[in-house]
Amino acid sequence: MHNQLTKSDIQKMEAEIEHRKLVVRKEAIEAVKEARAHGDLSENFEYYAAKKYKNQNESRIRYLERMIKTADVLEDTSAEDEVGMNNTVELYFEEDDEVETYRIVTTVRENSLEGRISVESPIGKAIYGRKAGERVKVKVNDSYEYYVVIRSITKTIDDSEDKIRSF
Image (cartoon, rainbow, N blue to C red; front, side, top):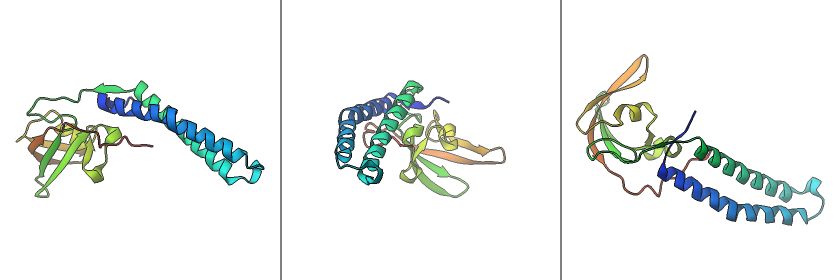
């Protein structure tokens, strides 16, 4: 499966990779050297902790590089009146008689607790490319679906605060 990322996601990942290679890697290697200098490695917790930190950093670098290599790049622009990537959308849930606000993002930046939902989620798939005022059916699975009305769409210009999830 290929990850769906925007150009902005890729830029953030490349910046994190560069930081991890130039800064974190050096710190981790120094920590391992310092811990090794303390003597007996068989009972040296600092050594094992430093090695673990170094390995986690290298693992994160490989993960991000693989994500970029296998990514399907999505456009993060859309027409002014339609739901697109990074847009904030106010939805009216008919079944619950409630209004909720979500931001449409890629799967690596989703966080439902912060109101960011993936374009791959049932709601994201249903409303992506739709216009304000439309009534949309959201199909969760074969036996459950519900309707939402897109009340408003706000274009988001700055997504610099959104963090790339780590796994």
